[in-house]
Amino acid sequence: MSCDLRIVAARIRPFVERRVAAADVDDVLQEVLVRVHREFDAIDDDERFARWLHRVAANAIADHHRRSARRDRKHEAAAVEPKDDAPEADDAAAVFASFVTYAVDSLPTPYREALHLTELGGLTMAEAAAREGLSVSGMKSRVQRGRRMLRELFEACCEIALDARGRIVEYSPRGGR
Image (cartoon, rainbow, N blue to C red; front, side, top):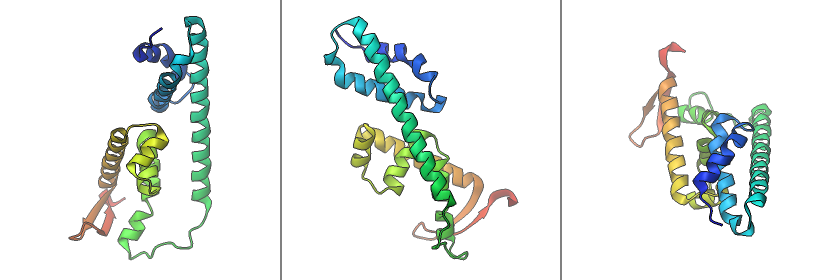
């Protein structure tokens, strides 16, 4: 029995779509396909494959919801805790940097996770890729797109003045907000 992952994806996509947010469907589906690819040789007939595929998908969906719940609890805890090391109001770069985590959290899931792991978490691209089950080039693409989205987000809300080294020296909200 051979496995065409496009057929598997088409077959299982409606099941996943009914159980996760639209923005997360492709990520969960990718996880299902990775698991199918890794363990496909263990299944030897079509009837067992269908049951196994749904079990794999259900487990990937459950894992996704657990990760989301942990991430949400972590963000709620971070938002409640007061910061003793709040930056001085006249240090524009430090004040602006305090908004970065919140801006990253507003990005779509794959880009948010990539930036949390690499930019905020300090992992290398290879470490982050291994952790997420991606290729290194896939992780690099997500990080680059996430950075681009962040830049667009900041440019849309603020006018930012940089010094010769590219550091933020001043910022102000656009349109008098």
